[in-house]
Image 1 (cartoon, rainbow, N blue to C red):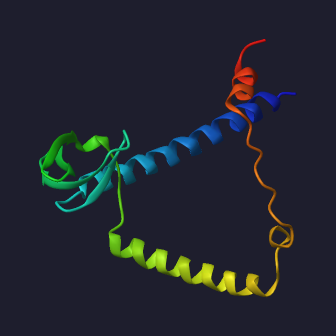
Image 2: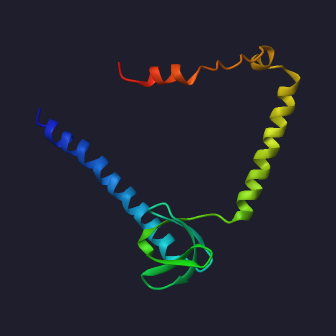
Image 3: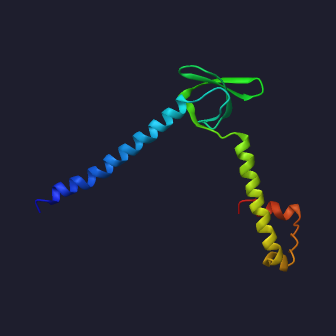
Length: 136
């Protein structure tokens, strides 16, 4: 019974200590990412705006969000730096190749949807539709 209180204290403090360490590590990574922003980087802000960095100051960055449209943001508003288009296209090409391979194997086996003919949609007059939407 005497060991119950110290054991309970340890059981509550250890997860809290580990959580604080993880949170500090994540904050450090975000700070390093925001300090490493350079002209030409494609970024996403915390509000979801996509843009390209055109100027960098100590505390602010200028983002080009459309052709000849430049806005000024705090560095802290940058959520992440997006990958270049070349990486995206290579990922898309490999995904397309995977889909083509899957389509080739599926072509040998007819699916259940192909075996059944599609049922035609029922067309209802406009008058009947309006009565279904009204409150009764």
